[in-house]
Amino acid sequence: MACESSSFLVRLPGVEGRDHLTNDIFFSSCGSGPIVNIVFFGGDIQNEADIMRVRPENRCYADKWSYESVAQLLLSRLEGVCGVHLWIVRASRWLLQTFACYDNFMRCNESGAPDFSGVHSLRGCSTSAWLHLDALLQNAVTYVNGASTECPCAIIGFSKGACVVTQLTYELGLYVDLPVFLGIPLISRVISLTWLDAGHNGQTHLWPTWTVALSRLKYRPSIPKLFVFATPYELCDKNRPWNRRDFNTFLHILSTFNLPYHVETFYKGHRWDHLTEANSIPGAFCPTIESHFEILASFPVNLCVSTSSDS
Image 1 (cartoon, rainbow, N blue to C red):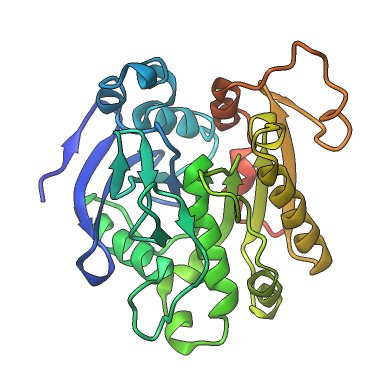
Image 2 (cartoon, rainbow, N blue to C red):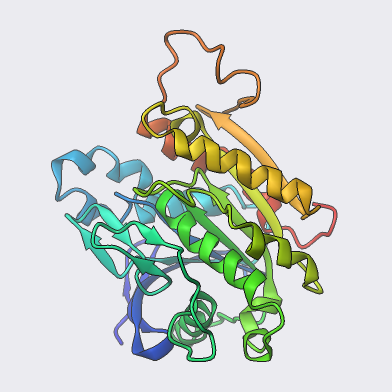
C-alpha cells in the first residue's frame, strides 16, 4: 500500500480491518513517540479538502473543517501534550460525496442512517465495531514509523461519526462477559469515548439510549470516561426534536447507573446552559451548521486524552 502525504496529513488508503473490510485512514502527529492515540470519526460533509470542494454546497467548509484542517486544529490544541498520534477513519461509503455511511462498523440503511436494532453475534465475528477498529489500527501502525497500538487510546466521534462511538459503547456493555470480546487488545487501552454534537438522519439513537447495554457497563472492571458535548444546532432544532429527547435520555441513564461521564454544551465557542437557555434565547439566536462545526474548536480535548483518573 502506498502512503500519500500532504504537508500535515498522511493518507493510508484501503487499510484492512476485520473480514477483509477496508477503510482509508489519515494519520498526523505532534511531539515524539506516541504517548496517546486519538481515533477520530468525522461527520457528513467532512472529507479531504479537495473532495469537499467538488460540491458547491460543501466548498465553503473545506478550508476550516476538512480532515487536514481538523487534524491541524486538534493537534494544535494539544501542543502541551507530548506524543499525540491522530488517526482519522474515513467512512467506507458516501452518498453524493456528502453523507458518510459507516457500514463497516454497523448496519446502515441505503441513505446512511445507522441501524442499532441488533448488535449482532460476536461469535460469528461478522459485525463487531471493536474487532474492525482494532484490526484497522493494528494494520495502520505498520505503515507509520514509530507508531504503536500499545499506548492509551481516546475515541472521538463528531456528528454522524458519533454513531460509531454509540455502536462501540453498546457492544462494550452487551459483550462484557464474552471471553472472545474481552480478548480484543484495543478494549483495554481505551481511556475515553467522546460524543461531539451527535446526530444522523435517523430518528432514534441520536445519542445512546439503549438502557440494557448502558446499564451493563457497570459490570466492566474498568469503564472508559464518557464525554458528552453538544450545541444548539443538534439540541434546539424544532424539526428534529428527537435529538434533544435522546440527549436527555442518555444523560438520565448515565446518571441513574452512576457511570463516569462529563457533559458540557457550547454555542459559538462559549459554554451554553442547555437546561436554562434553550427556551429563553433571543430571536437572533440561530444555530447554523457553522456553529455545529465550531464545537471542534471549543470542546476540552485535553480532558479526553488525559490518563488521569481525576479528569
